[in-house]
Image 1 (cartoon, rainbow, N blue to C red):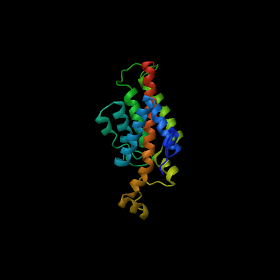
Image 2 (image 1 turned 180 degrees about the horizontal axis):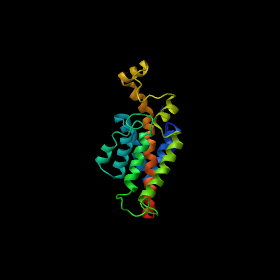
Image 3 (image 1 turned 60 degrees about the horizontal axis):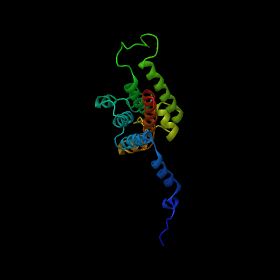
Image 4 (image 1 turned 45 degrees about the horizontal axis):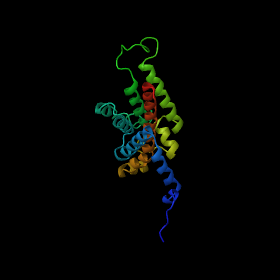
Length: 209
């Protein structure tokens, strides 16, 4: 006999489904926008890789900022800087890049720091950039690509160690990139989310809303 559904609670398979339904009904415009940014970043990282570009692209597209030149310029910044793994996470770099695009100085002769005393677009970008940096570090325990990998996987899938037969086997089959992307997609999604919240908050301040 089919299940009889007489109350709203009866219409869901489980509690998680019910909560998601209620969230979608009550989410704000900012929350809706953030959800779309996160989904875009996650899906593109899964399909196309390059964590920096995927953060940049999702934020550019949904916040309607910048152009393809910026997207192109970030091509070499993923994988802990040109795939070295030993430097800052490319997803965080993508977020910082977008903050610079939105809030940064456009000319050396702009008034204020660092050329002269006082607040400026330069100092504002440093402030929101530091906020993103600290939130990202708190979330993942590090800002360094290899350290983030090791904390999650227990080892570093990337960069490739071609002297290791097992690592080389995973590389030749392509499985190593799929392994890495299972978590990189989460990192990219979170970096895009954190960056977007900062930008939206600052925009609301500017508008007095």
